[in-house]
Image 1 (spheres, rainbow, N blue to C red):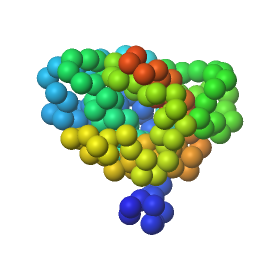
Image 2: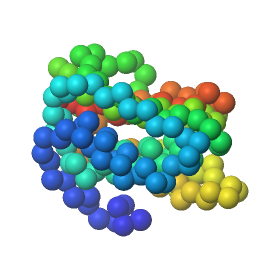
Image 3: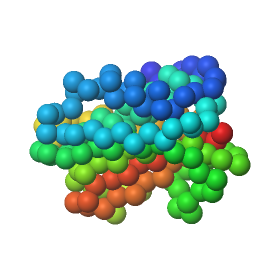
Image 4: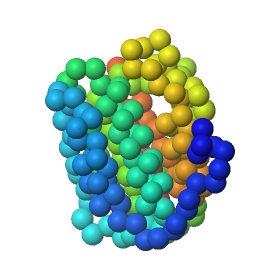
Length: 173
C-alpha cells in the first residue's frame, strides 16, 4: 500500500540487467523449494539500460516469487536476458521508443494462467490465491506494471493453463 501512496524512489542510472538478475536469484535462493530448479541464460555483453536498480530488482523479485508459487512440486524457472532491435506485436504494455531493447524473461513450468484470468492479472488486489493456503495480496504484479509504466518499460505475457507462463520486461537502451 505504501508504494501506491507515495512516489517510488527513481534514482535513474545505467543498470547492468545481468547483475541485477544474479543478485535477485541470490536473494531468493533459500525461498525456492528444493524441487524447483532455476536456470540462468544471461546474454553476455548486454548494454546497460537506464533505470532504477531498486525498482528493477523489486519487479524481478515479484516475478520470481510468482513463478515459484505457480509450480506445485517439481519444476523449473528460467531467467533469460538478451537484446532486441524490434518488439513483438502483442504486448500488455508498450515500452518507450528505442533502437534497441534489453529484455528480461522469467519463465516457469507452473500451472499457467487461464485465458479468462489473464486480462486481470495486473489489477491491484486481484489474486487467484484467495482460497489457497498461499494467500496472495494481489499487489505483486500490479506493482510490476506500475513500475514498468513509470520507467517507460514494456511487458509481455504468454501463458496457457497447465503449460506455464512467460513474463518479459522490455527496457529501452
